Amino acid sequence: MNFLSKFSIIISFFSLWLCSFVSAENQLFIGFIFILSFGILHGSNDIFVLKKILLKNEKFSFLRILLLYVLFILCCIVLFYYFPIIILLLFILFSGYHFGEQQLLYLNSKSETTNNLFMQLFQTLYGLLILFLLFEFHNNEVISVISDISRFKLNPLAITYGLLAIVFLFLVSSIFILKRNVTYRKFLLKELFYLLVFSVIFKVSSLIWGFTIYFVVWHSLPSIINQVNFLYGEFSFNNFLRYFKTALPYWLISLIGLGLFYFFSNEMKLFNSLFFSFLAAITFPHVLVIYNMIRKFKYAK
Image (cartoon, rainbow, N blue to C red; front, side, top):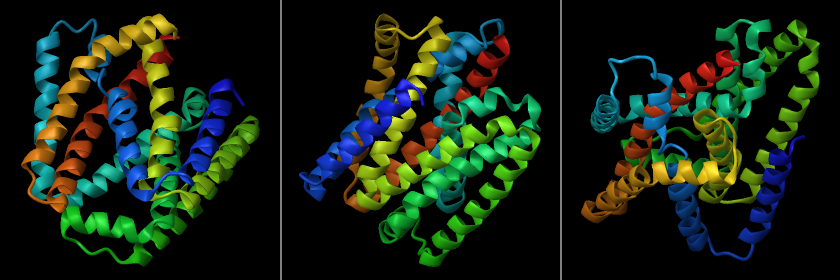
C-alpha cells in the first residue's frame, strides 16, 4: 500500500468522524464546495493535456482544440436536455469506466497479458461497482434525484438488481484475470479491501458526503498527480502550482457558469437538472482526454 492510499484511507475515516459533528445541511454545503473545488479542478486542464497529446499534429492549434472542446460540451448539454434518460445512462457508464480506469491504473499498465478490451470492461465493472454501492446505500435519494432531472420514476429494485449483476460480472472477470496471471492476486485483494472501505464510507455517510469523499480523495487528487506527471515530467509542489495556474481561468469559468445556472433557475429541481447536465457535459470530454493521456503516457515509457 503506497503513501497516497494510506493518506486516502486516513482522510476518509477522518471525514466520516467529522460528519458526526456536522449537520446534514452543512454536509451538503461542504460537499459541494469540495466537488466544485478539487473535483472541477481536476478536469480544468483538459485543454492543455489534449494539446500535449496532439503535440505533433499541426492541424490542431490551441484555439481549435478549445473551440472543439467547448462545442462538444454545448452539444452534450443540449442532448441532456432533450434525451435525459439516455444521456444519464451514458453518464453513469462513462463515469464508471473513468473511475475504474483511475482506480486500476496499475492493472491497466500491465494489460499486455490480457485482452485490452477485456481490461477496459473490467475497469468499467469496477467503477460501476463503486457507483452502485453508493446508489444502493442511498436508494431513495438517488431515485429522487433521477426523478428531478429526468421526470422518470425508477423502481428501487432496479438499483439492487443492477448492483447484484455488476458484482457477479466483476467476480467472474476477476477469476478470469487471476487465471491469466496469478501475480495479480495481491493487487486484486488490495482492491477488494478498498471496496470494503468504500462500502463503509457510503453506508455511514450521506449521499453527497460519501460521494465527496470518494470523488475528491480517491479520484480527483490521484488524477491531478497523474496529470502533473504527464504535463511536467514529475509531481512536485512547483509543478502543481504550474498546473493550478493554467487550470485557474477554466476552473473559474466553470464556477461562473454553474453560478449563472443557479441564478437563472427558478426552483431547485430545475437547478438539479442543469447541474447534472453540466457535470455530464464536462465528464464526457474529460473521460476521453484522460483515456488518451493514459495510453500516451503508457506507451511513451
